[in-house]
Image (cartoon, rainbow, N blue to C red; front, side, top):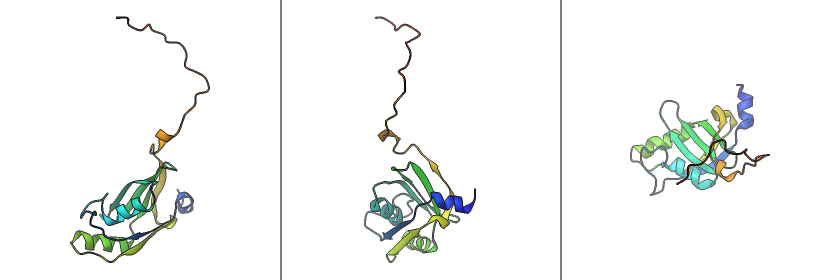
Length: 133
């Protein structure tokens, strides 16, 4: 897949990140970055942040049903490294855009329960009888 095609499916995100008492050290889903993303918009679900290897930020959106994976920016990596070592880092503005996508967004079933699927015709008759008591 071409880089420009990935960018067309991406969404830009700008979120202020600050450490809060509820945030957990060495947690991919409850770190300050993950919690800030979740709190910025209630459509962001299943947020995960990892600083292993190149690092990534992943989340799903309930309105689009898509899952997105972004490269972890260096500023975010530094923030996590400080946080995980017990130092309270300075607040920063997390910025994600299409150039940072590390894989093609894909459809999930997140939010599918809100969609009504209508059938064009009803099901046919039962082909076996129901047991009687």
